[in-house]
Length: 344
Image (cartoon, rainbow, N blue to C red; front, side, top):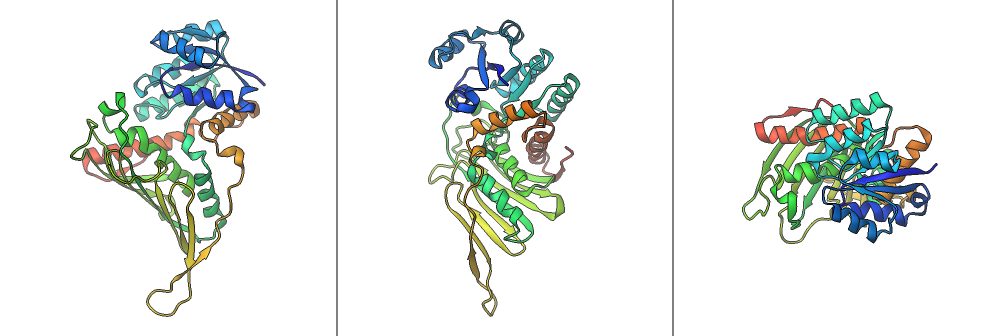
């Protein structure tokens, strides 16, 4: 089935979406981008010219562009503070919505969007593109294989120093709200466990070029006594980690480390006598299901497949709210200095 899509928000991030749609044969054969919406009309016009969307309806009013274009999908790529109004308008206009993260600026907003989508019978999902990369999928499958026994802990370090400019440098809780949700969602996916509680310390280090909250350290309690720890900074100059972070997963029989790129190393307990029993290497199976590992393209393909089959997409809003709850739980903990239970 073919779908008519309006892309709302024509800033820099929109190019990742349109490149994924136009360069992937399956998506190009399933989706026609029939409308572009932005408060800055010239940004939409430039995007249309760059991607050959000369027939697309262009405007600044989402409901009007949906009506004129006959769209049944909206791709939401606006800044977080505009998200609730954009997604609400799209759902009320009869469109399914695939939205950038975070899915709301509060849990109440996110819950209201989930309720509205259910009420309208529309599909609502969130772009968690970093769970659709090969490394994250491999870690999940390796844990499920039982090769390191029962999972007991996940640890991730995330240290980079990107100079974005723009809205991020003026955000509150910039690392937790704008970036850490990727890592939190990946941890939830790898562990396949429900997050229960968090304790977090958030700082804006000396030398930070962000206004607020460029670093955070958090300890999450997951179901079944699994612990996830996160150490991160977005103003860490020097040698960076990968954008996916550096991971160590601990099981009852061994551990798996991943550098966020191509280096996977699995080890299980050895049988050396004495205080430390040593370790032996274990094989980490090669990547599988290549179609799942293309970031934005894979997320959009998952969304289209959900529309075709009627089955909820992997990143459906009613599930993704748990990742958002991890973020807001960490923010509340940092603000209050207390352990916070995660209700979603």
